[in-house]
Amino acid sequence: MAGASLFTLIDDIATLLDDIAAMSKVAAKKTAGVLGDDLALNAQQVSGVTADRELPVVWAVAKGSLLNKVILVPAALLISAFLPMLIVPMLMLGGLFLCYEGAHKLVESYLATPDISSKGDGSMPEDAAEYEKQKIAGAIRTDFILSAEIIVISLGTVAGASLFSQFTVLSIIALIMTIGVYGIVALIVKIDDAGLYLLAHNPPKSVAALFGTSLVNSAPYLMKTLSVVGTLAMFMVGGGILTHGLHLVSDWINHVSALLSPFLTNWLEWVVPALLNGIFGFLAGLLVVVVFYGFSIIRKRVAW
Image (cartoon, rainbow, N blue to C red; front, side, top):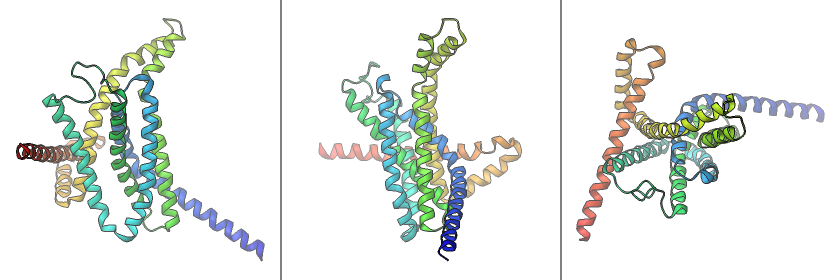
């Protein structure tokens, strides 16, 4: 009798683990789209530090990302259980913050506002430690919003499961996404070093040396591309979060996409909604920037 109960328990555990694996697979598929944006944003966020500090910065941001998820997973479960109506507004605030950061970056670049990342002559700041600290803090803030989106999307796939299954699936997704994103970011920021290693340890005209040369030459262009893609991702991800919360805007985007879909190939159909989300995100972020600048001017005049 005891043996039968043990086998029944083992069977229940196996079934539970199988369900968790299946739900984790579904959640991973649904969050894969965010992974690309997360990768571009974080690679762009940690660029700009000295070569010897790139991996320590990536590691610091990765630890911050894990801490974000340690906070977000229980918080998401609690909010889902007791205050589910707060999930969408909180996500929208996070999306608006992403749009603001992207717009603020563009406005400062356009106005040529001196930034801590340089002294105005293209050189690195004198206080490199403070600059690095700010880069890490900014990357962790951005990661918090993207992690929240990943957690909420994953939560939607396990809404009907038990609390243990929900917690397990969310934890698995959080861990996989963190390792995946920051593992790839670490590889990206060290591409030039890999190229230099190949050049130093192979004959000048060998295939390995030529490949190393191509890595070294392409690294600056890759980082510039990631910077642009990261900014665009801020608008597309943030704008997408905002439009999904604003049903009228979301319905209009879907309507426009449906009208244009006959003129686009299947693999280009995603471009229209992504572009419209990006435009909406840019306008929303620009509006917040204008409001902040307005308050800043008023505050200075009142203080005067």
